[in-house]
Image 1 (cartoon, rainbow, N blue to C red):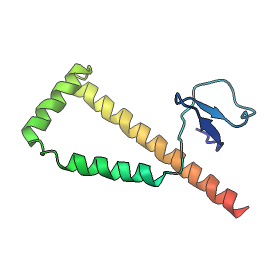
Image 2 (image 1 turned 180 degrees about the vertical axis):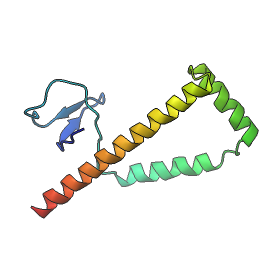
Image 3 (image 1 turned 120 degrees about the vertical axis):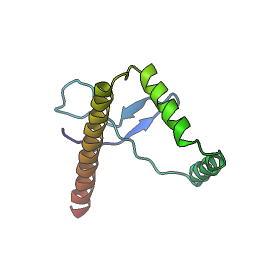
Image 4 (image 1 turned 60 degrees about the vertical axis):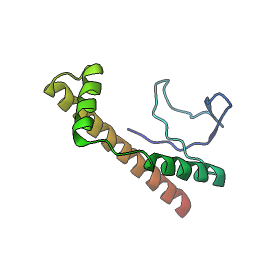
Length: 114
């Protein structure tokens, strides 16, 4: 996996466009991490949502287990093997995201050094 840092803009319908083409990259699907400066309003809205969420009563462990089992079954994860495969896929994704984050951090450090 390779990481390239670039800049771009998000339009009113949520479409991302880069400020300039990335040369030497083949046409393919890519994973994108978007970083932007938060405004004070966004931060305040985030904490308001957290405060509202904290007002909800907690679900019992039994109810959580029942609803999780039902959701997994509805999504097609109806056997132990399928659930284990799902967990392994998620762990792989998390590992890839951590590697990408490390690459981005390293790129930023190298850029700041120069």
